[in-house]
Image (cartoon, rainbow, N blue to C red; front, top):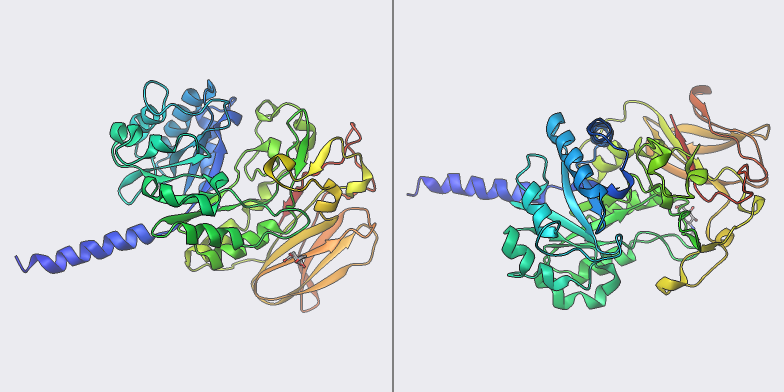
Length: 434
Ligand SMILES: *[C@@H]1O[C@H](CO)[C@@H](O)[C@H](O)[C@H]1NC(C)=O
C-alpha cells in the first residue's frame, strides 16, 4: 500500500490548503428584504460577487414572516446564478423578540436541514457554516451532542456571543468551531483599534476568528432614543487592521441595515427601510464603499492585485453636526455600559477620503470656492481626512500627476445647516467615488 502514501499526503495537503483559505462575508438583514424578488437577490449577489465578497450571512430574527419567503428567494437566486457565491445562516437571537427554537418546525435545525445541501450553502472544513447574533441564553442548544447538532449533524459554528466578553467564553469553547466579535465600533471620541479582536483571538485558542468590519453606525430608527458611534476613518482603518489581526473570516456589517446607516448595498425601495429612517437614508448612497473592496479583500487574503486605474472614495455627513438639532440622538449607548456623550462630540466634522493610486500622485480636495488643499499620495492605498473648518460647497476631489489632472469628481454639497425638513442633524454619511 506504500504507493498510496504520496496520494494521501497530497490530499491532506489539499485539505489543509482548502481550510486555510480566507473568506469575506456581508451581513444581510433578511428582515429588510420584504420587497425582494429572486431578481433583486440576483442583483445583490452579483454586486457583492463583483466586490469580491464570498457569501452573504443571512441574518434573521424569530419569528419573522419574511424569513421563509426571502431565504427561499435568496437560495433560488444564488443557485440560478451558479457563480460560486454562497449563503449561510446567521441566527439573530435578539432581533425578533424571541430566541430561535433549536428544533421543530421553523427552527435552527429545520432551516439548516432544509438548505445545507444546496449548492449555494457555504461549507467550511466539510460542514455547513452557521453564525449568530448573540444567543448566550441558548448556548446549550449548540453543544456537541446537543439538540441542533443531533438533528443536523456536523456544523461549523461561529457565533457572535460578544456579550460574554473575552473573559467569559472559556467554558463554551467546546461548543464552537470559531468566534465572531461584534465589537467593531469605537467607544466615544476615539478610533477603533484591534485590541478587542486580539483579545478575542487569545480567548479562543484553536478556534477560527471572524472579524467584523463596518463603515459607520447611526441608528435612526428606534422611535425613541437613537445612537451614534464614531465611523469617520473606520472603513479605511478597519481594513488595514485585518492585515494585523489576520482572521480566518471577515464579516462586513452590513449589506442592508439602512436604519443603522452601515449599509454598503443598494437601496431598492424605501419600503425596505425601517420606519422613520428613510429621511436619513434617502440621497445618502453608500455603494461607493464597495469600490475598494476588491483591493482590500485581495490584501487581506494575500492575493495579488493589479491597480489598473487611479481611484478615490470619499464620505462625510453633508452639514456640520451643529447645523441641526440632535433630535434625541446620543453618542454611544449607556444601556451597553458605555458613557453617554453628545453625538457631536463623538463624530468629527470632516471629509474622509481614500485614494488607490497606480503611482505617486498629488490628491487635492477643494470645497466650493475655497482654495484646494493638497495631499502627497503614494502608490497603493492612502487615506486622509480634512476638517470642514466652516467651508461649504461641493467638494471636488482630484488626482494630479506631473501637473496634469488625471481624474476628478465632485461630491454632494456641504451646507452650513441641515437640509432635512425635520431640522435634525443627519449623522448618516454620503459616499462617493471615482
Ligand atoms: C484616528 O485615525 C485617523 C486616521 O488614521 C488619524 O488621522 C487620527 O489622528 C486618529 N485620531 C486619534 C485620536 O488617534
